[in-house]
Length: 478
Image (cartoon, rainbow, N blue to C red; front, side, top):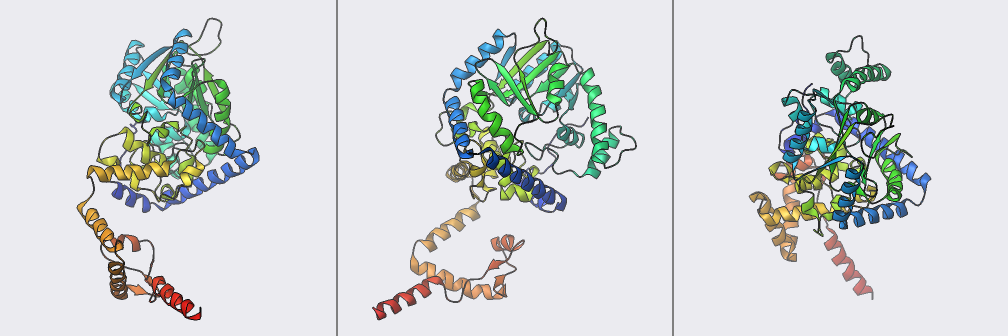
């Protein structure tokens, strides 16, 4: 089974150009994003009082993160009281170490996984495969991208970028015979193959949508039921959980049981909401014999107490911001070069990871604010993107050409005479590139703009001149 590594170049501009050349990707992303957005609108309108529910969700997440130490301790105490084991991981390396220790202790040879963004974050598949462990993703979309050796393109719909013909080829190479592109045929092959993996697996690994502090319960949302197989059939269950995924009580869970599915896919309810409270007890008919919960920090705690970025920990990973983002709509998820794509990834990735690969992500946004309007817990993502841009500028990690350009911009726009002179000069220079009122070709920075759109020309009589003439006329009449 190939590892799920990102095969794209680390440069954001190059990744974007590759995505813009993929016509199927762009069509598939637009189609799916529109469908999910429309379903969400219909579902929330029917539900009623959506803004009140959003505010309630925001308040719960804000309260929880403000008292995260208290609720984390309560959650851990409850997990241990019910017979579970808890491991804290400061970073991805410690999380991987904990997983591998459990695998060695259990002498495991095979692992099945339910969808988990944290497992992608720490690249656990690669480490398991290097140790000779068979690891299989059981979410259908994750299974497809694993066979392709790729990372998910969307938080909720990982294989959004794959055609049925591509999926048929992947399944055929994985042992499928006489397959067609019919959805039922492809799903049937996956169901048969994965069922065998479930029955043979030594360990099941899942993520965690929410951890309920008052009971130590792990809550998982799926639409395929694969999480129930992963948590019940193997003897050992490992939960990979971001430290911020806590909710105080089941009363709070009720709010998010309505917010999350409607925001993610427009469903009234997620098909399966599985709850695991401790390992199997005497007399239980199902459940793993041992439960290990690995709570990952990996940069999250650094946002605590930061008035500019703490709210990013409110995120419930619904993907709603991706479905309304005009940038994600054009380039898909892989162009972001991160486990977390879209607007949420453009903020979260630079905060969690260091490196040039993520420095430019905050600039991959139009700052339209659609992500805030879509977010079920009202995270001001657009404000955070501006702050991250400012942070990069303050640190000096800005190209010299860009610095000079903005100095020139400041010089021109800070004095009306310089501004008027620049406009007049631009009006003369544009004549060599203008046609039918638009600039259709350009050079330097302008070439990037006109490569995919027409730029309007400067008018012969600008608004300032019109206003000056109008003011004189009005004064004369009065």
